[in-house]
Length: 165
Image (cartoon, rainbow, N blue to C red):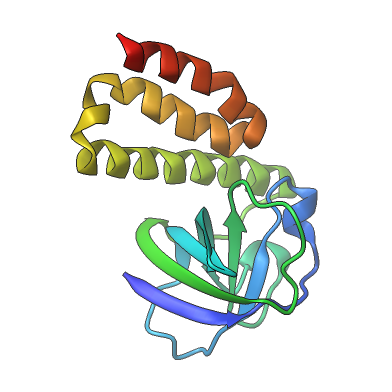
C-alpha cells in the first residue's frame, strides 16, 4: 500500500462530465508509485470512502504534468482546498491513451466495476459471515459503482432478506 496526502486543487472537470468527478492532488514526479489506475481508499475530514485513483499524466487529455486524480464513491460535495489521505491498494491497469472521450468513459466505468469487485472480495475474505452471500455482496458493490446511493437502495433489501435466512 502507498499513502499519498495532499490538498485538492482545481482541474479541468472532465471527470465530472464523464460521470466520475475526481479530486486532484499535485504530486512529485519522483513519487515512488507506477502510473496507472488503482483501487483505493480516501479519508477526508475523518470519513472514509471507497475510491478509484489514477496516477499519471492523463495522456488521453494531453496532460503534461503528473497528477493524482481520485473518484470517491458515494461522496457528494466539493473538496477543493481540503486535505485528503489517499491509500492506493491494487493496481487495476496501466495508464494509457484512449482514442476518444467515449472510449475513456467506457474504461473508467470498467475500472469502477473492478474497484468494487475488489472491495467486495476484501469484505468476503475478511468477514466470513458474508461468504454464503458472496454474489449478493459483489452485486451490491457493483451497484454502488454504477448507480451511487440509488444502487445501494436497490440492492440492500435483497441483502437483508438473504441474511435473515
